Image (tube, rainbow over all chains, first blue to last red; front, side, top):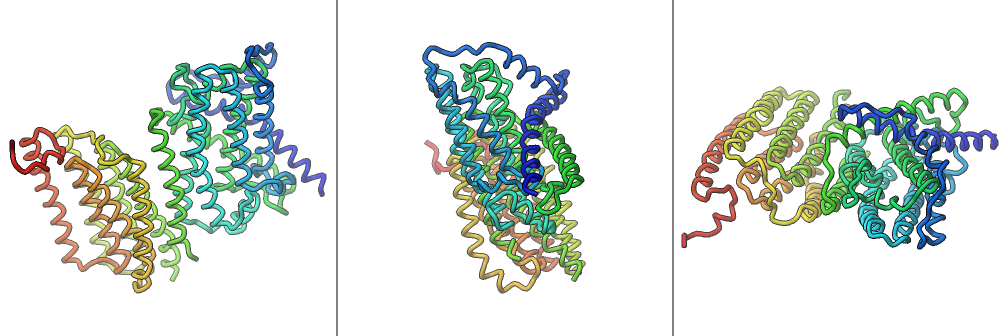
Length: 318
Length: 221
């Protein structure tokens, strides 16, 4: 019994690591189609990673050990987060280690390391990107916490697996506050993953970069790990969204045999395909905001999440 | 009993959407978007009135729902759109204070409205009485929008949104007002928009802009 849960855990982590670049590739593909360009194949991100891994890393002379360690820290935190988030099953040995609030702390750790590494080299663009990233991060975090508090109130737990279990046990709970929380969550997801209203992932213009500016000094295997970690981060955020708002198909505690796991994998793939297409659609329809508009955008997300709490308190009394 | 069990969550959901749209209106800068949002508000009002009419069995409410659909979803947005195109006033980038601050003030207003509505809704006997707080919040947010905008067109949209909030309060607290009053209000709103439309042209003729700051000076110098 214990062995099975560990195998399940391992399977989930391996699947997350394998699928995350494909998910990022799928969003890029959808965007290309929507913009009437011919799309790169789904394997493109893998080719990119292989190319980067086979190159020799070049380091700046001023690079400290922190800079060398950062890619591994980033990748490690994202893999750990993928182990905690119930993307396939809820009976996970790792999930007991941290609740959703600690999970946000984990993301914050990764952000701090990435920013420090960007400032470590001492180039102008790196530290500019790091400062912008910290600004977006500190505005997005309270909004994300408020979204999670909404879910905590509804389903009575701060651990994501327990949330999913409770949701599956009472599928009839439809609360108006969920709309507010979901809209706020999508806004935070776009901001945190350097997506279009805040940052453009495909930009080549250094002055407008946030996330890309921090990666300018990384090369070869370091760059590959950082890129992989950022696609894992996007995947993790998507999975948090699925766990909070559309947990259908996830194998729950006690009902997680082989058949349930297969259904769960199929459900995850379908949800990822739909979510990727939706994200690409949102990104195509919106324009990148000026950096000084970012606080306004994130204040809106925070406000929506707080409104969700208020509406729940007023209307959701059952 | 069965009709009520589905009606309550549905009306609650629509009420939440109404509040969401009110906040979206506060944050938008383009006047055209505001009008679209106003039309959506009307559509949600139409749906919620239909649901209340169905669950309470009051056939009068269907008429007021139809009136809402005709007036607030179709007629008024069309008139307003024509107006702003002819006035060349599609943009309204000027707010008196910056938007995040308006949002926070709006949040405080919502808390205030919810607190205020709590004892009142205890006295109401309808199934949808909990949404009274949201209706009150929508009214206050529309007030806020009228206060914080400088252009005449956006202030009128704020006024119309406030009327939407009042209408929602009426259906949620007492299953709507008597038909005569409702017809009177509808006519008033329609005529009001026509008259204000005339005013817009007058204002623009006088000051060559729709900015109401120009009207603060009483005498010419």
